[in-house]
Length: 269
Image (cartoon, rainbow, N blue to C red; front, side, top):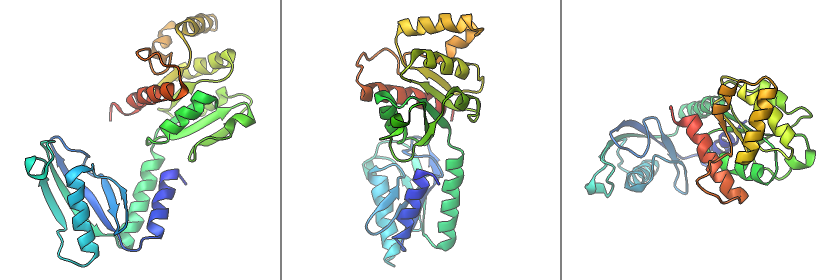
């Protein structure tokens, strides 16, 4: 069971009275897309339909519905000056009490969405690997950290899958189509082996390797000597996160790399 699904089920378990707010329609510039939803209880909310005055209005109506007061089951909201939002679009919302059938349907919906999440494989549990795993856990992806050292798999964020493999390149070969691969082990020779394997997968969404221009050039020479197609090197992101920011602190590198990976995974959605 995935981390987010576990959170949803924990939220549902202690709140018998909830309302479901779902974006029925989104026209023009809007904070969230059609289908986005949130759960509203009298003491807490789960999820978001985009925040701002639109969300405040929805929460107010949802809590009125839970309390048995006169409340609207549908809202049609223009996002203009009259509500203090200037997105310019229009949002239709449906609000309903979360009965048992809706609870089951919502859990099934979450499970289906999470099963379809893209996979990101991090090879290396060092400082940058740990920081990057933490950043990626905030995104709708499945994160797996692959290591050859048992101790390097300690201290990773909750929700991260841990794999101890003597031959980490095997994880590249068995990864699902559309996966992202980020190579940042403690050994340059191992980095080259894994990155080379990842570049040979034509269905990889992203291949990145930590390092410098010099390391990239050294890898290119190694890749050519080992039968690698030079054209495949165009797909390699190295240094990960680009070179616009020179800060080498792990958290900064992780933030830049996470943005780069998100662009590769979600830009075409």
